Length: 153
Image (cartoon, rainbow, N blue to C red; front, side, top):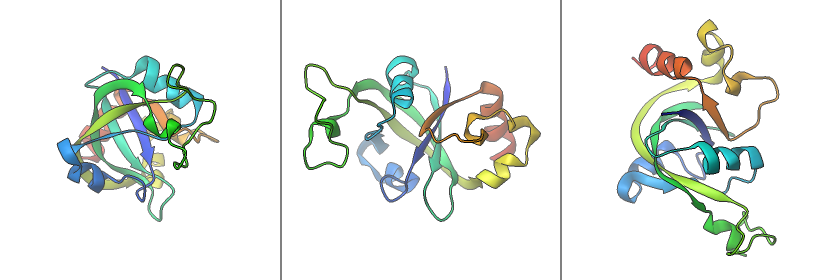
């Protein structure tokens, strides 16, 4: 089992949206970074834990917990000319982008970036690395345990 931090802009998909979604799950669509795509395609497995992170908003931070509930499959938005995620180079025979599905586990109190930075146990967390802009990053099992048992107790 692996652990991940997945960023979503709350006006696109929030933890509240995930909780209200049919089957309480959503496709993690629109990822257009190769490294993040490769994490979904090559490493994410059903059952992996997810720190659901609200980004690009007034109060960014970890807003809840989710779980990968479906492995990688082609992201339909790449084929939709009306979508901001359309990719003219993607074809049905050779899709360029994938998504996984994540399901709601629980909403949590918001754990801000500033609060995460306060803890020595999290100094190696990829989210906190200078210049990190990836929308999906692996989370070390010790970091997951610290966040879920100490910060979210």
